[in-house]
Image (cartoon, rainbow, N blue to C red; front, side):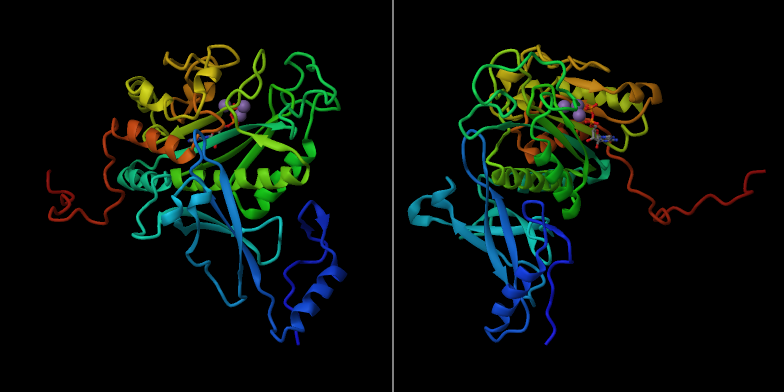
Length: 396
Ligand code: ADP
Ligand code: MN
Ligand code: MN
Ligand code: MN
């Protein structure tokens, strides 16, 4: 009988440890003694709950037979996730994005789900992805793409920032920590290293990472891709960092202003472009003008406690005063200098909080920017219907 090996020898699994062949073999032989000849695998179903003011991620594990190729629809008890009442507690988990599980390794997978109503299959009120999908479809011709810079702050389980001395008091003021290197300047590196590898192994569109301005604050970027892809990948990346930090007894906070005082807040700068913006500076300015007309609608949906973060200090613009400018990190929307030089590219909405819902943010940007743009002509229809192309040489 042939063993189906879920790991390659020496593969990093779980908490960065190397795959242990003898432990695997004893597990596999125990399984074989049950009389079946293939190992099942694990699917971790991930979804957003109904917690207010900021939803949290939840997940649970389904064991799938080796013959199952696509993870099936599943369910959960919504009365325990603030998504249902006890008498009608069942909610549906509809798989929408699947990738390899880099922590369990092998055939195991992560399964991101939309929450649907068990009775009808309609999107649950907490399901923001369904509306994003609708808007993305409506404006598909604009080919809008996004890159999200996810900042976060590591905290101890007692609620103190991980970058602050364990014994109490505050570290030296901000300055040396951003993109820093060396003990005393950088805290939690082993967690972000593990997370970065996990994202790469899962096939997520992670683009880079950096230490942030406040000690123990970090960033990774995901993109650039369409609204649903970037948001799905970001959700899985968020789940992975929480799962990895759990092994280190570190809490990942997406709070907009995790520490009061002269400490930076945490954002999720959202870079965006349409096809038109990628070829014309006028389209970039037009997008900024469109955003200037819907300030409240955006800011009110960019994450809880945005007014504590967007104060006008710490590289932000005041939340209630819209501005845009080239290279300006004190503006609501920044146009990078290379974009101004090239007269084409993208813009960066600096307002979304670290705790924003990416489906909501990208949905709003799609709606505001694309409804203000002319709908691009359908791409390359082979021959214009009805009208014959003008014959060459007709006019002499
Ligand atoms: P900074 O820290 O200087 O603001 P980052 O390097 O952290 O910038 O992030 C830049 C982001 O811009 C990345 O997420 C990237 O995907 C995104 N981006 C680059 N080009 C485009 C584009 N044409 N459309 C949308 N996003 C883009
Ligand atoms: Mn950045
Ligand atoms: Mn940053
Ligand atoms: Mn940025």
